[in-house]
Length: 440
Ligand code: IMP
Image 1 (cartoon, rainbow, N blue to C red):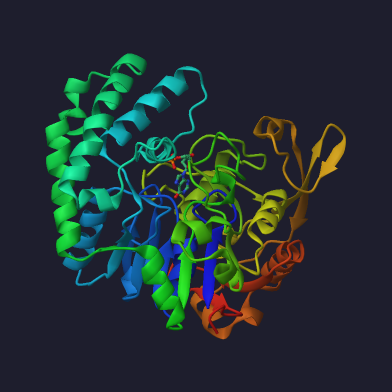
Image 2 (cartoon, rainbow, N blue to C red; image 1 turned 90 degrees about the vertical axis):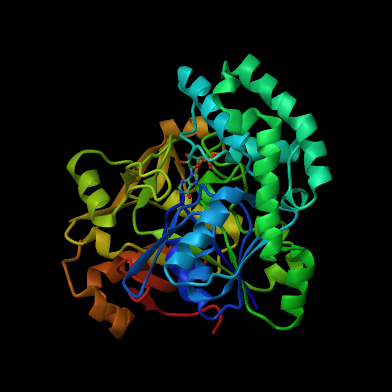
């Protein structure tokens, strides 16, 4: 059985908690795209774990695999694994030899291009982790792969081509003084650092041929959980381009980015994580965005600060056109709606049912991002709900939710072709009402 978990909005929908709760019944958790731009917080047994690369399931003792569709910064990988070990965990993390490597020059170039774009006011507000430049090199056939780090001659050969081109790009296009960044632009320093990472990954037997590894696990009848990072609105094909990440978080890529066949992935389930309102970090359109006291209140109640960058997240009402789009492009079978507790005490709670653009009603967003700014949200108002003991609600089940919260949830799910699998009522793994389990 294969289950895919995706974000339906702009990331930070609480996928980590969903993956963590399904991870218990999974044998392998695979991330299929993105890199250390993805922040996920997992709270378990009162302990909080902030991870950006290691799949959340690894906190629970499940094998975590970074698939070939990921971009992997070996520094982050090693430091997260070491950090978890220091806290008494023993994560079993594997990384695909076909996954691409984020090298130090990718981070410098990410910052340099964002700075250049911001002069024109068109920056994406990236996490600065080098994600875009690494995927560019992958598509440009000049990338480094994890397997290359284990082969010193091959690594040297690749660097001999790529480093001089990066130096020229940095200097001539972005006006970067490359001598200020020897760790990023000095060939020998890069070689030493990257080959040392290769040795460590090899010593710990962390690298795998993912296609063979997953085929064997699947044939053995293992339960495989595919974890998408970011969200549909940040997908390079289906999101608010160009204010997107450089990979494909939607479920279609779960097959290619893990190396499981699409027919295998397609027989399983696709569960969408939904936040009960909307948040977004970085730039890009946001028709239901709020400001002032209400946004601040939700931001504080929901802890809405970026896990990776610490940036305050932008806050807005739930946006049904965004969710309908996510439902279509991912083929959702179920949804987990998180942060229902965060809206406590807000009355009324609003949800954008549709957009009005040029006198026409739109049920899903326009394809061109530039047209989102002419979209006027058409809201529906719902009665709010008051504070309850959410831990009790979680233990008693769906009927223990406040009536008004259930009305809101039923409206949301009624607009989608998916069932309500879970409702998140707090940050802890235990703070969730489970209605159905895809691995049941
Ligand atoms: P990048 O992925 O660092 O290139 O950033 C591109 C856009 O995606 C920016 O708007 C980031 O803020 C956003 N982004 C990247 N990763 C995440 C995430 O895990 N959660 C939310 N937003 C993200």
